[in-house]
Length: 156
Image (cartoon, rainbow, N blue to C red):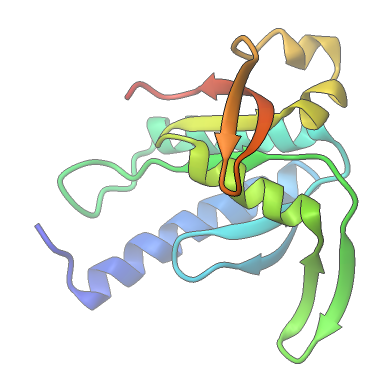
């Protein structure tokens, strides 16, 4: 089933209303939306980033946003690293290797899953680390090998 433009817009707006509320509740800041299906969000620390991602997945499971045959599920990549914030012609933006790493982790995640880099895991409290799956070694675009941990929040 394909959605019409209006239905698609309603699904996207409902999702971002939910996400924006959770970003604020977890101390984050949305730098920008990436088209209709993504966002770059910064958090003061890895614990808050994981708390947000978990809350987003839980919210979508508890109050599904349905715009097709299955409810909307998201994938999240979390990385800790240095970024450069700059003013651009279209507003404030973030740049740097950490931004690219987060994007690659996001692409690695499955719907309903959070993928975290080793640097994000190392920056987390012991309590948060206990919620993670075992570390695994993966190869990302560009043949870069990294260690990641996964959190499956919603059933596949």
